[in-house]
Image (cartoon, rainbow, N blue to C red; front, side):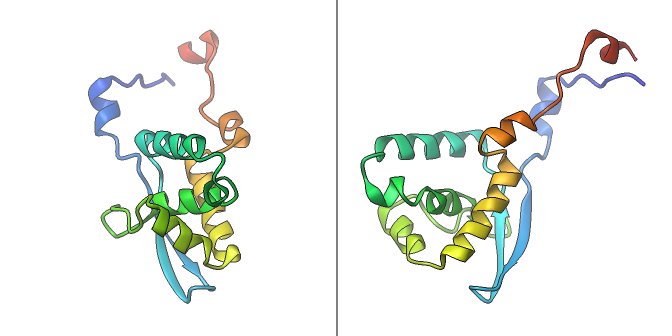
Length: 129
């Protein structure tokens, strides 16, 4: 079985942003959680770096991820990365925020375990088989 090599067009046309619907009992309903794209991951990194001395951001980074990942049926964010939205999410149930963050972490490969579990590096013999 040969390996399919992707070209630029195939990569850019792939539908790689997933949306999951998850029931959050603490909130009494279903939320939509989307895979973060590279720009969003970069923005989160910038926000965390620029606000590393701000307790709202450094102590509650999960709410930042949640604000980027909660979306409507089309994948549009329902929260912004404004201070007021982050502060509002920080006041919500930690159980709900932690559940959503764990789902985001698994969907987006956040953290070291995500890096280690990412795409397999193929050897020459695997490419030829």
